Amino acid sequence: MKSILKQHSRASAIATAALAIFVASPALSQDLNALIWCDHADPALLQPFEEANGVKVNVKEFEGTGAGLALVEQSQPGDWDVMVIDSIDVSRGVEKGLFEPLPEDQLPFADLFPEVKMDSSTVVDGKRYGITEKFGYNTIGFNNTKVDVADMQSMASLTDPKYKGRIAIYDYYLPVIGMAAMSLGKKTADLTDADLPAISDVLMKMKANAKLVGEVTASQTALATGEVDILVGGGEWVTAGLAKENPALDFSIPKEGAVLWSQALAMFKDSKNKDLALKFIQYILSPEGQARLATSSCYWGMPANSKAALTDEQKKTLRFDEQPAFLARAQAYPAPSAELDKKMQDIWTGMLQAQ
Image 1 (cartoon, rainbow, N blue to C red):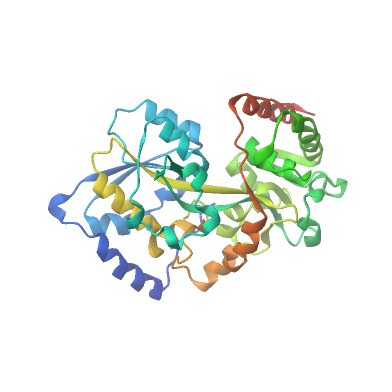
Image 2 (cartoon, rainbow, N blue to C red; image 1 turned 120 degrees about the vertical axis):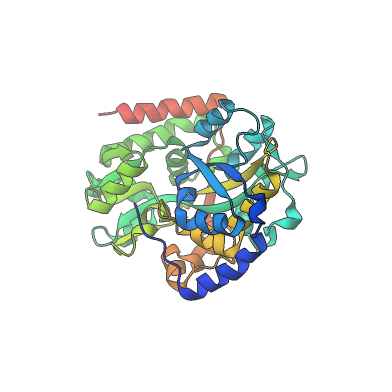
């Protein structure tokens, strides 16, 4: 999914003025090394910061917290300055001694949507180690010309035989297991071994309806090309960036709710460029940085800062004004113990292997 980020003239003027606060002397030119998700690799996001500060941002992309932490373990202390990480996993990095506390008085915490501050996972022993920068939902993505839109207001549609062969499932076990649990009226934060048989049954019924189970690109492509009409686990991250090319692509937050995903920025305690790392985090969380991140060419998502400098059209595409109601129905990713996590992966594997 490659939609081109376009800022209108008013937003550009705001960005130019706001970026002045980040300007550094060219004599202090240096590199910033960032472990990132693909949305941070967009030149439209990075170039304004680089030009304003006379620096180069070197990025290394990864998918998933496990892969990111593995890269850190293979690196030398000080190799990396900042990291994008699932908000719920910030505490994992803290436990490994990786991150530096962030100065709350120098970041726009008051402007964040309250539901995405993620204090339970980004604050450890009274110190905040991560700040949520972007969020969205694993929910039901669909083509609104091919399905009954009223059906998309309930997760029951995902196991309805009328949609057999018309569904793709996003191949990531935690959010889809979370959706299956929510379809049963269960809370994602309270799952135990006892819940797994019923969740497995829902997964099997979804699989019976599915034409494919695919990773990010395969599942996005299947919905975008019309190979399927519904994507289980889809959301604005799939549909928003394609809205101009295919306005029929849509998403719903059904009555049962949705699984909230959120990503955070953290600073490495061994960074050799902590001042520049903080400037980068400040830029990303600024209104103009948030607008660019939210509409990145890799995937769109909701900016964590409620004052993001989005255009009216961009806000409409992201359904910005509906967020309070969406967030009220959303639940966090399941955060299982190691033992329960293994069992969840086992039932997911069982679903994948089912004929």
